[in-house]
Image 1 (cartoon, rainbow, N blue to C red):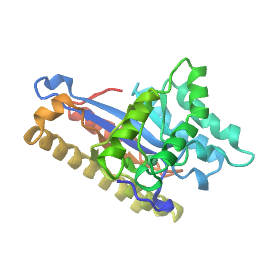
Image 2 (cartoon, helix red, strand yellow):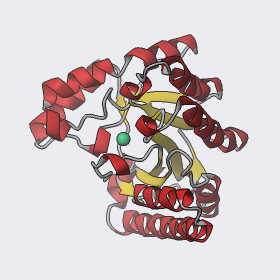
Image 3 (cartoon, rainbow, N blue to C red):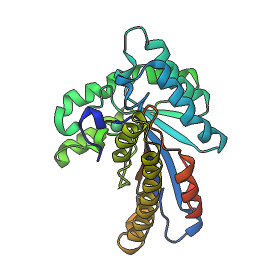
Image 4 (cartoon, rainbow, N blue to C red):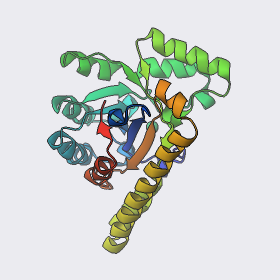
Length: 265
Ligand SMILES: [Zn+2]
């Protein structure tokens, strides 16, 4: 799970959603989503830095024709004098052929703020995103829970799900996590200090760990819950980065390709 301290609420977190269909090996799929747009560290970044990071992130995705959905926290758009420029970062996603989803206005945890306040945060988080999607003839249809918190009890969870479904959302879950966000804060610190050796070490470690998580999770899915997975798609969180701290997405993508997983939305 993502930590709650602001310094670790790093910007983008790629979410890979895996779906293993044990009876049809060729149909194993994986989807990429990225949380906390326009950037997890947006409060500490300028609009220029956010837009540069966004371009850097989207270019390989676009060039490699990788479908992706970005999940937005609209509160991060409201910085005096920069609102239009920050909205531009979201437009870049849509202009590049990707899709946007809602991640609540303020990244509110359903486990902390209570259902009513959380619902208001969901609604408040729709304003700009829906407007941009409409401009691109798209509908707002995906939602991801901040911190992946789905409620402290089953009743809250079910009521929240009903609320989301009523508003036309499909919930994007994550069931497998490579703890990618833990790398980004350390990486960014190394970058600021000019420690390129540590940066490279972190990238290698991250990729190695990602491969391990992928292999472990796939084995577990086959060994333990193959039948359930055939009915309900498992999802895996992987990769991370922030402002300049962006671990290139094409690296894990290669690993996934080697694993025979098909990228899908
Ligand atoms: Zn998030």
